[in-house]
Image 1 (cartoon, rainbow, N blue to C red):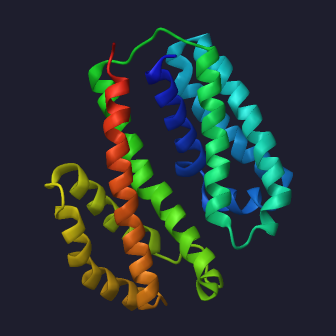
Image 2 (image 1 turned 90 degrees about the horizontal axis):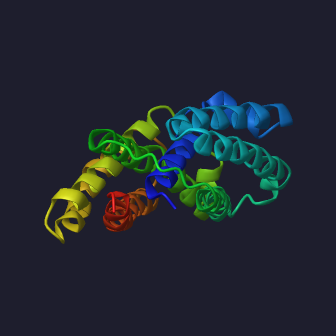
Image 3 (image 1 turned 90 degrees about the vertical axis):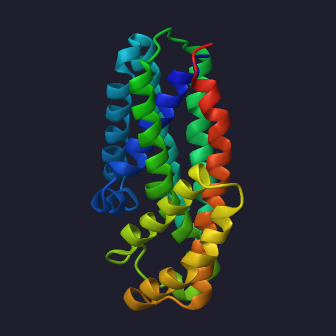
Length: 238
């Protein structure tokens, strides 16, 4: 298995499934087969484009992954409405299936192409940015919606909410990457007050919501930066 190939494959999946999934696509995807087809076409196209440098050994698994993505999301179209209180768990299982398929395809196709150090660094930067912003904010909002009925009644993301949360999530990732061992946990305590003021001023959240959200971002950043140490080593040419 070529770890760089699998890494770019997962990055392409994240780009198509999160970054290029607009609010409109997300809405029609949850309502119709046409919406699922549009979303999966975007995912498949992004995967083909990013895996094209690996040759046909990259393009073929990208097309297979896009087709399987359609089947998985088609199942979600008819089952997701029954899982109102377990959306985060459902999300994690869904992403686990997608990424599991990518690893399976990566074990079958093993292209020899390796990225240059500068291109690999750029890919790593985009990967971390997507996880720390797009994915982290979705997971966090799912968590508080699952825990609190009053939050479930609100729009999934209110105007400006995702941008504010992305900023604080990034601060934790930067902290765990660059600050001394226990400093980021001190950062959590320091950020509670400004985050609380900003959230309470702009959005209808209570103190308990703020604590859950900020704590989640800190915990995810800790887990993500810890895991990244293992991922980074695996991406280096052997």
